[in-house]
Image (cartoon, rainbow, N blue to C red; front, side, top):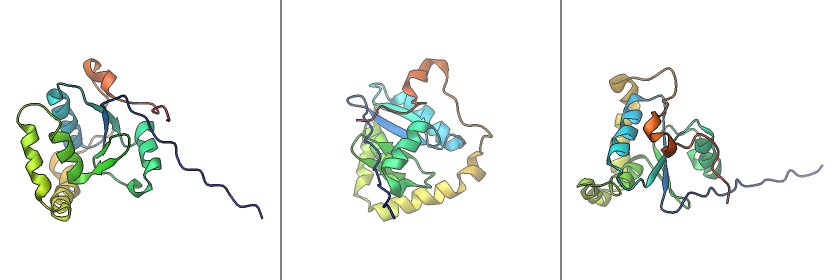
Length: 152
């Protein structure tokens, strides 16, 4: 019997200096978070994709531990941040005083992730859920990755 060859997914390449935020496109809280980042990311460091879009599926294929996640994920090209670590990574790269939130990195991840999970489990009840995935507005469409990213 011939053994099946397993191939690992190719590494995604992001434009220099960019990170990709993956989010639950049906979640009103998550969509609000994306709008929040869009308004404060003056240097346009972040690109966006719903977890269910091809770019999101590519990242999940590259990092099998993300399979089944409905958490916010930040992909930097060589690393992923999830749950509260993703939120802190984002905050530390925004303009204004938001980088001061980086102080919370000193809190152990298991505590930060527990608080994040508490909110995440209730987000649909508290903030609602859409029937269709969020579609970006015209002025920011270029920041959303709807297709596969080129493989490196």
